[in-house]
Length: 327
Ligand code: AQP
Image (cartoon, rainbow, N blue to C red; front, top):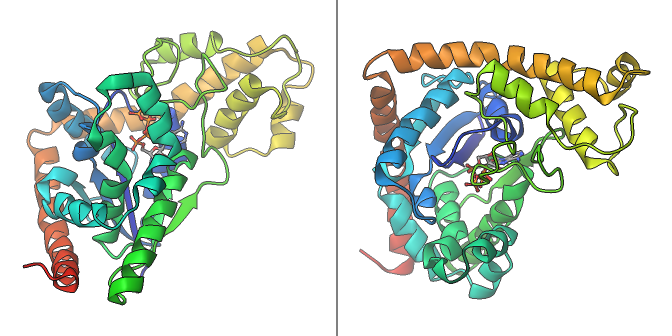
């Protein structure tokens, strides 16, 4: 029996190389090892107000990008969260078991709510309970995510253990899986902040669909420091982040990269990095154009994905309802 993988991505903003390096390329690369479920988490997206028309088109865009990154709908279930209503139902039940204190400690909530001030929704506070429901509905063993989502997977584990402790062996207790390299790609404009979809500064992130000239411009303008040597030094976050991106796209070793750029400056390195990223994304961008050019294909993939996910989710929810005395 293969282990079950579940992971999700929000249909918000422009999917960037951080999402790709930290998450989706691993989802695609490990498809044969696991039994995979990938979810476009639109219910999570609305924890921050969205334009309704935008959400619909972003769902298709994200799905197209997942398929273009190599996710094969014959090997992996790909579906939209709100198409399987059990996600919301289990989230409500979990709400009644997860202590407020656990939620209040979540770093993502603290960061996002501090930006929104009094506009912050109960849904944003509750984001981790919905994420726990997503994961626990599918008897998930492994959750491959970027570093920023590790805390939420740990809360999911705690919620599963707490529930199982009261009602017996209902949930599989999942493990987070964080990539060794590139689990936290930083913003190009500010390498002390995580590269993020919701950050609006024009030079912050490289989107997967950015054209070559835009990628080149963003990299050439990336914030570095006043040093000159191109070496992996975590105390120099700008160049360290760019080198990490270089390393994930080329697969080369630190010492080989450093040797290649010995005696050269940041300008030469940035030019080489731009080339590597442009060429690295080119096949993905070409596949995306092909996939999205086929009328009705993405909707078909999503409809088939929901049809496969639904019975699995139904089964777990029925077990949970019975355990707590509902239904
Ligand atoms: N900078 C990053 N480096 C590595 N991995 C990252 N991920 C996100 N940012 C980075 C991982 O990508 C997956 C999908 O992300 P998401 O859309 O579910 O949510 P997010 O983490 O909230 O992404 P963003 O880009 O920061 O969007 P906003 O600004 O809307 O919050 C996850 O596995 C995530 O860890």
